[in-house]
Image 1 (tube, rainbow, N blue to C red):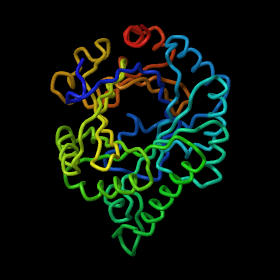
Image 2 (cartoon, helix red, strand yellow):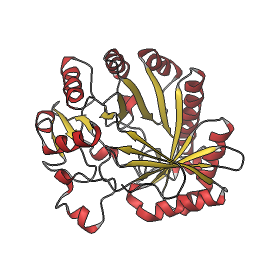
Image 3 (cartoon, rainbow, N blue to C red):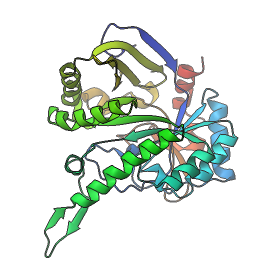
Image 4 (cartoon, helix red, strand yellow):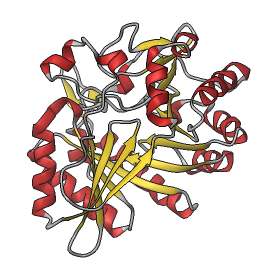
Length: 332
């Protein structure tokens, strides 16, 4: 098994999460966003059909203990608290990735429903830096066709997220911060995020830009080196390409560098051109459940390719070679 680079102590855990894409909606348009592989999904809602889908997937994969919301921005689904309460009642731990664009009342509703773990995607702590990560939103129209960036919009987005992070921490939620690095030019922006996270004693993960290959990975290594970071631990999940290396800064603050190791499903990846030309970005990361615009549930196993091996109805997935291969990875 290919592991994160380095020779530090190694922790191996078993993948137990199911990712649920609850909405496509998002107020941001980040340059590195992959939108979980699709942009034509319905907002999910809680009901007997979704419950039965989750039960069927849990029966096939008994190791599933955790649901991780993705999107879009999950909190833009108005039914999120109801979905959360339903999943928690099934005995599942519920987590979310979020950009923090919600008010204190919504945060409290989600926490009361049982959503107690938040991975905040923080791209910047300053409006100018944040706006540079956006491709199409956060603009104000002037006369004619000219469009000017709105620093006011960017400022409000940043301040709302930082306030949400601190409030979630006050409520006792598990809080982490993720930030994406595309190139070495991101170093000044990222160091400000690191400083803010460290000052508030919040765990931080550096994520490479999947679409920017080794340039992104080398940039992260350079940033860690510039900070005097020392590698202390490596982690990997059985049944997922997800892995990470943990570093400690001279003052004791720890930063994780999340990476992808080489883990492919033969049933899905054999014969794929991306496997042959090296353009596969995520390998096999895990199972994603989504609901199409026609309200049909489907499983997605790959971000980059959409065909009958990578994206299928739940019914087809439950009798697929892909499921058998995943079972052999995580159910042993």
